[in-house]
Length: 464
Image (tube, rainbow, N blue to C red; front, side):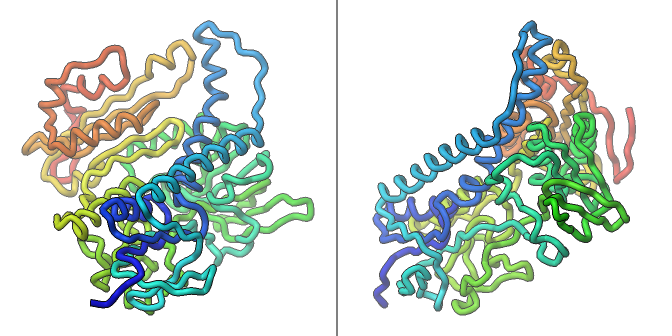
């Protein structure tokens, strides 16, 4: 047998890469992990963690306004962008330190370098221009924001990466995109007092979510003062001598803003990685092609997380890493389970969802029952806010199994996590009906919708 420098070499220090390296090292394997930027990956460094901190920061303006309805007098308030950035950076530094210590504590070797494949067992460390070999290799380089380089003037725009490091808060921003990143940042910037416009080429934001969630959030965002332009897209961006930006759209509009953010999707981060030299196959988007066990076209090379373009969620990458360890080092072949993944959009209000949308369920089953409630939550009664919650359960009529659950409103993400457990366990609508409500809560509506709002039979809605 050939002698290798490492039993396992991991390329990429994000959630999937760190988990696989730490667990393998903890089993006594000789492991190295290489990261060219910072340990923690997209989620910790420039994704969901700092974004959620920004979400919290952006909500305080409404909290101060709501306080008056509950008897509180709040004095003059102001927002300091620089202080938020400094606090965010301290927290990210702390989290990165934890990732590093956990890896070192398990016995993994941390390499701060870009790593590229030379052949199926050899990796080049760009920083030192040296090569090492490994018996097994894991590719966990994640994804990267699409800069939309074909757009004239894209060099004047930012992506979500730069949004976390702006030197000052713009007075106005135009965000291109209709996915969860675009929607979340539109709410964040608006909550911080920025005049915000969202432009999206589709007919409605959040294309893969349930229609009621999409329409409800759209309405709530516009009610807050966020301008949403649909069925249009930016065709050119120019910069004025004074520094402002002007966007010309396909429909002939001219939009002016201090900052333009392109949130037009993310691409697998595989460019220049040397995959072709190792014989690793990729698809037309550059995503690494893997089988059910995350194995690439080369049997001893694996790929985890966003780089495979399967499901771009941090917990999924971690789950895939744990399955890789079970399969390769514990003699327990385990394929990642990508069914019924609960997820959230940290918009304002939030969306929490798990399972099939009404549209998808209606295509899959002969008949479905739709349980839907729309109401003003208790918290909004004294604050005077008109914002409403929407809750929705999708049930397969033939076996009463709940196949989709969707929530729009405060703490929807927290509810989605618990709903995810229920749906994963195969819960039926009768199980929901037998469950006592926790009163007074918004979530109790999920177990008090006893009669379907309507049915959909062979694609046709039936009321009553």
